[in-house]
Length: 145
Length: 433
Image (tube, rainbow over all chains, first blue to last red; front, side, top):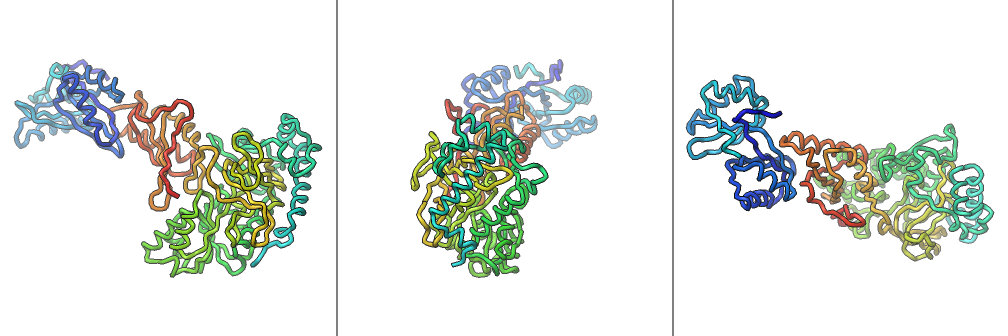
């Protein structure tokens, strides 16, 4: 699905075998191209994992990693600014829950001025609309390209 | 020492060879006259039944291989009509198609007779309780051993494979004296028994193991004998011959191949040239009296050597040494034959994975494990873990269906498996026999 919204962010997802050195190889490749990683997570399954990252230049990260032989895909996610204090996560999670938006997975990072929750949801447009309606703050895709 | 059929088993070698020649000549005439497949084969080879004037002339006959069975699936080269068949056994072929072996009642009788002689030769008979822990079903091991053991008047405990703890209880409760299974399964049983607080050596009456269907070594024999306090005998057979058929005698100096049932040759696997007794090469059988699916010069793919001299036990029939390997890349996993080509064919049907794969065979405890490492196709990669797990399950399921053995699957990064120019070496075998 193609979202036109300025709040839909391209996350890179990289398939990785679960063995020593694979994350280092990915991180090294990004360092070489001077690509900054804002947030990342590793989802682990039996014997393999998927490394997911928000970077400042997803297109170039995709190209670089693909050239190196990695399997890379783009996935649409949204990133919500949270108050970095008790209840911050609850506010966002409640908005989505009330709107019937399901979270497939999520990870967070604590940024310079706020905590950020990265979300992969089943209905991105609905999620964006609801968060804005409830006065939430979304990071714009321009930050990540 | 007991002998099931002394007249045949101790027949002077000259006489035995005459008998083999007579049987061969009859077989060749019969097939040339009544089987289109054999007729054409012999014509292609430029050999006529009249050219067979001695036992040695057998080497003029064309070879048969497993692919002849596969290419004629399921029964196109059977030489008995359907209503004469009393049983089928089915084993996995080298590719997608299995191989089917049919039996007339005479074929079963011959198989049973062969095993009756073999089991008697390793000291079993009336009064023995034989636990058959080979699989019953399409695999030949279970039913074959079953009828052989009944024939000699032993009592059969048809446990088949699996449920090891129950097998050990029955072994104790029923006073089992002999077990027929794969050597690795017997070692596994010993380990499970130990966990249950049972010593097979001290707490059971087990004294004999009839072990086969997979490669093993003298070291394994010593280990089994020491740990379980039994005598372990090597048994040989393949489904194309009927099933398990030939076994060592109490001398344990090679496996007796009953000459009236099979004519044995050893050939150079590359040239097909016959080799002399004592030389190592590919084992080739002609089953002299089979009705439903006669095998002429069937290339087993097993490497061994032949001994022609009369055994110390008095049996005159030739013997083969321990199987020392394969001419092809066939693997034997928990008694089941697995060809890498079967795995390749199965993977080709799954677009989510690439064509490159690696097979890792290992032994965890006593049991073989098979792991297939396969690259995920770039097109199939999604960010979703559940999709990837689904691919993994699909591969495991497809391979299990094809191979009849449980397979571990590992998804790996594209391009990470070794590429080969020329002959691929896809198998990593870490087992120590």
